[in-house]
Image (cartoon, rainbow, N blue to C red; front, side):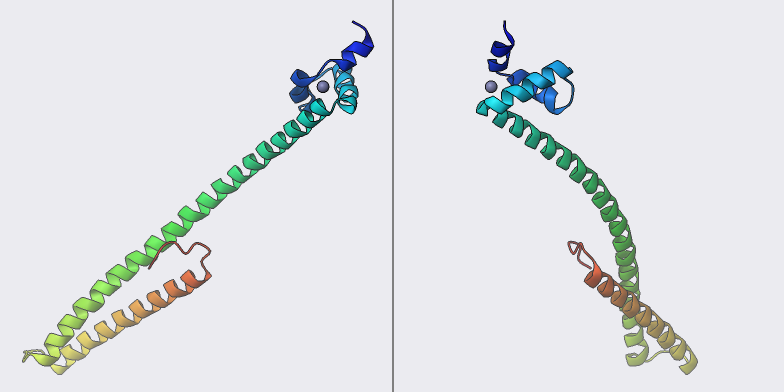
Length: 150
Ligand SMILES: [Zn+2]
């Protein structure tokens, strides 16, 4: 087999090794020389290179996805914390409203001071509820992931 004929031989099976830098210097030269003269092998070489690049990119984006997931779970924890507070406060506000309605509409044995205390407690809960709700709305506005409702 002369050197001339070896260059004419297609190098398809060597291309991936060539791209990965796993060939001997002799093989590398053979691939290079052949691809300069053979369109088929040259385009295969380009395809393999493009494929390797794509794999490299998808590995990178997989890494990005992990970071994204981490951010998501962190955001989810914050969200459920906020939602939990909203549920507790919302329930308290409703219970307070029901109690307040009774206090001011039904004839009760409560003194004015007791009514004031109840009113104050209710007002405090309402303020807390509004401030948490406000915070949630601000967070939601600045949130990149708007998939979770309040
Ligand atoms: Zn060829």
